[in-house]
Image 1 (spheres, rainbow, N blue to C red):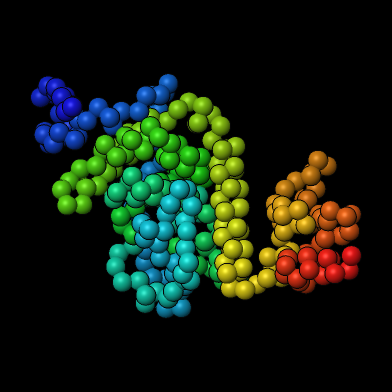
Image 2: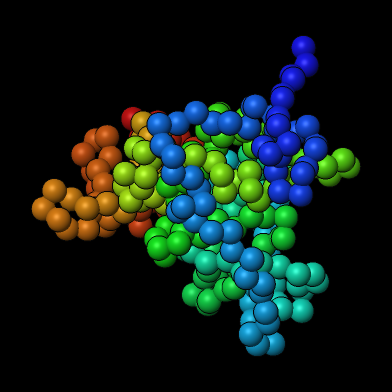
Length: 275
C-alpha cells in the first residue's frame, strides 16, 4: 500500500522541494524530547591537508565502518597515497555513511586508530561520511547505539533521496531527536561504548595473530576450561589498576601468560600421557 502525505505550500522545505521522499512520515522518530542531534553535535567538514611529506595517513572509506566499529585490515600509508579529498578525523568523532545507511555503516573513531607501532597517525575519511563531532569537545561515542537502533535506522533508510546513488541529506541527520535519558547519561554510555570498541579491537588483533600462526599467543589467552582469561583493563575495589592481576588455572597453578609456551592441543596431549 502506498503512503500519501499532504503538505501545504507553506510547509514545504526550503526552495519548495517537491520530492515525495522528503515528506515520508517514516522519517519521524518518536521520543520524549525536543532536543535534536544538531543541538549536541556539528557535522565537521574540515578537510585533510598534508602536514609533512613523511606524514603517515590512515584512510577510511565507507566499507570500514560497521556496527559501531572501524574495522581495518590495512596499515597507514603515506601522504602520497591519498588521491582525493578527505575529511580530517579526531578521536571521539562518530562517522555515519550518507550512502546506503541500511548497511549500518556507523562507527566510533577511537583513539587507538591514531597510533601505529608507537608512531602518530593522521586518520582521514571519505567525503561520503558525515563526521559527527561534539560541540562541547566531549566524546560523541554515546550516539553510536542510538544511531544503530531500529527506529533511527528506519528513519535514515526512509530519508534517502536521489536516483542512482541515493543519499541521506544532512538535515535529516541533524534533525534526529535525542532521547532525554540518552543525553542525561551520555558520559557513562560513552565510556561503555569506548570500552566495548577497545575489546572488539583487541579481539580482532588476537584473532589475526592466531591466523598468522601465533599459537603461543592463542594459548596465553585461553584457560583450561576454554574461557577467555585475557584481563580487561579495570579498576579494582580499592581503586587500583587491576590489569596486571595474575590468573590461576583450574588446578590452582599460576597461569600467567609468560609461562605458557605450547599450543592448546600440545599441552592437552602432554597432560594425557603423564596420567
